[in-house]
Image (cartoon, one colour):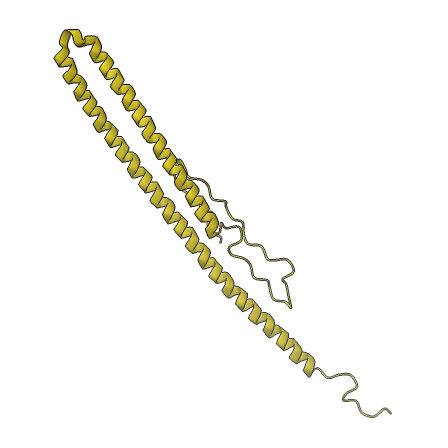
Length: 188
């Protein structure tokens, strides 16, 4: 049974990872049937090769970085909007309770900075988690490719040895088969 295709994880905060192309069941090469020996089937056909894995990994890493930059910009914009709102509200009431309002605004600003810092830390942690998962998946897929490539090479060697053996047996059988007229007596 063939293993399932490579399926990267999804995360609602970071978005879906780019999908690796699935792979089809290996097909025997055309014209490879010789002397009753079945052809060697490719185990890596349809799988992404290490260069494609690296390319997909790099593309997703760039996407993760862009998502992180975008997330930080959004958080900064929200922080600025909320900070502006806090200070506008404080200015409207400043005439009545200047010292009290300014102190309250500063406390809210500190809470907002703390909240922003926590959100930024969570974003950084998720980025690192997704990046590590991507690295592990790329490594696993590359190792599976190498394992299958080695198995494919061993199968090709066994196939070649079997084909050579069959040719040698065929030659021996032809040499041992008596030629017509060789053992016949004199004509009557």
